Image (cartoon, rainbow over all chains, first blue to last red; front, side, top):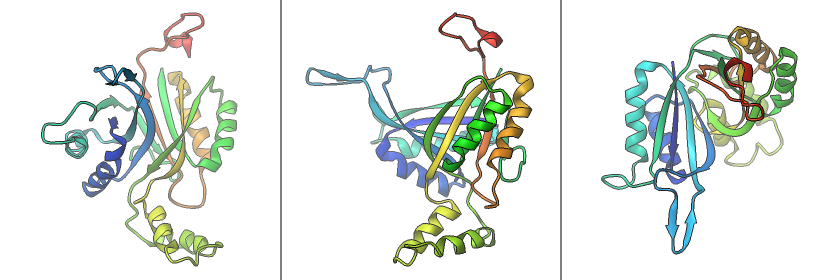
Length: 108
Length: 135
């Protein structure tokens, strides 16, 4: 099992969620976060904005679906043909155990 | 050292906090999140819950059935509380059991998930101690 944390543009959330659902990965948790990237935020006029609102999607899935989910998120979250700064990042970490509370079952 | 992520119902926050303290968790962080689970393929699983929700006041409004369906079968995001905590390897089983016991309901779906992940290192800011001592 792996945990996927994807930080995307808030306005792309609905599109990414719809695409994920269509690809068969319905289970997801979304958190509103603020952050900045390598570009140190955005400079508009003389003001630097370094707390840019983003949405973080968290999902625990079987490791064999990694490539597929990353591809779905990348395609849906990208803006324009080549993508742009601020489209987001995807982090993947290992998970040792997953439990479902209602059934007490281990694994998904 | 392991990190436990637990996603539970909003109204179970108090029960979960109590269960965690009884299970001996040193500290935890909780946030409000929005989420959804696996799609419900079999409408019979949620039929009882749907009937109960349709009997609530306000359910006679025109979009109510559509909204209730959306919440119950897992298309929409709904509010949940996410707990995250660091625990020693040997305590994981006990704490997972405690969270599950505090959060189990009769609603068949939506009770939440618990995710256990390995954590490489932790540092206590006050003293600078790291590793297992910092938990």
